[in-house]
Every structure is written in structure tokens, then in C-alpha cells.
Image (cartoon, rainbow, N blue to C red; front, side, top):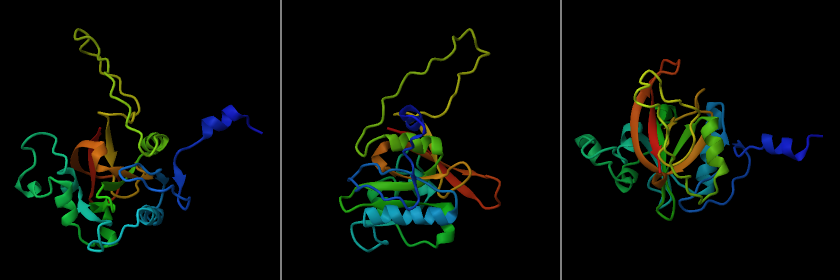
Length: 221
């Protein structure tokens, strides 16, 4: 039998689809879920909605709906004046929630699920890499993100050297990518509170599929 140290090394903070979720805390994190298919993604969505007792748009205070990546990213404009007139109406989480409407399931790859619980806290449901999900899962429901660290750059005279880039470390100031649906690059579902994100930018990617997919690059806070 493996010893305790070996078990600790293989411990995971990412749940499998169907595993029970802990009670949801307003504005808190919930454990990520590992998903590899569209069907598992749907099951994960339903589990996260159920634990927060979310209903469809117009059902009451606890609600969810879909918005485009551009609309969601406009909630956190990176700099003054970046959002154009079309984005201005969505530059507030409350305004975005007010515009949510039912969407056809097949449009999920163009849009992100946005949630608001009964306490008025807002979240975006997205899919991330397992590496990022594991780090989020290790945080407690109310645990703040670790502080940012100053990265050491090569001396100016060593201009030919590039800054060493390793795996993303989930901490304040780090940038991660959110996907609207499961993909080879994003195999874990995660519900991120709006107040954990400082800035965001939407972009289109082509991940070996014919359909257009939009992701959101977010900066954590």
C-alpha cells in the first residue's frame, strides 16, 4: 500500500463530475470540476446552478444567463477609455446581469455563463486548464489570492535573453485564460467571482475546430 507521502502527492483539489459540492458561500470559491466532454460540461453547469439555487433569467434574484465574451470582458476595462460605446452599457456587472437572456445551448461556445446569487454576488462560469483549476481548488472558499511577486528580468545588457516563463501561478496580477466550453486546453469547470478579476480582454481563437470560439484573458486580483 502506498505510504501517506505518496498519497499526499497524488491528492487533487479538482472534483469529478457528479461529486457533491460543499455549501456555497456568497462571493466564495467552489471546487473546480474536471470535464472532458460537452455532456460533462452541461452536468457541471447544472451542479453549480443547483448549489446556488439559480434560476433562468427573470426567475428572481438568483439567476444565470449567457453573455458574449466581449460583453463580459467590458465589465473590467483594462484602461480608461478602452471600452467603446457598444461596451459602455455593459461596463458594470449589474447592467450586464440586467441584459441576460435565455440562449440556445449550441451557442455556448460564443458566450459565457454569468451568474448572480441571492446575495447579489456575481460570477462567471468558465473552463480553465487543469493546472489552473488545481491551484484554485487548493484555495479555501474565502481565501484571498496570494500576493503578486516581482519577477526578475535579465539585466539590460543581456538583451538577448528572454524572461523565463514557467507554468501559470494563480496569484494576484497573474493572467489566465477562460474558455466558454470544455476544450483540449481547458478541461476543468470553474466559477470565478467577479471581484477576483481586475481586468479582462476578449479574443478569438481557432483550436483546431471550424467554429469560432472566443476566450477571455483575465488578470486576477
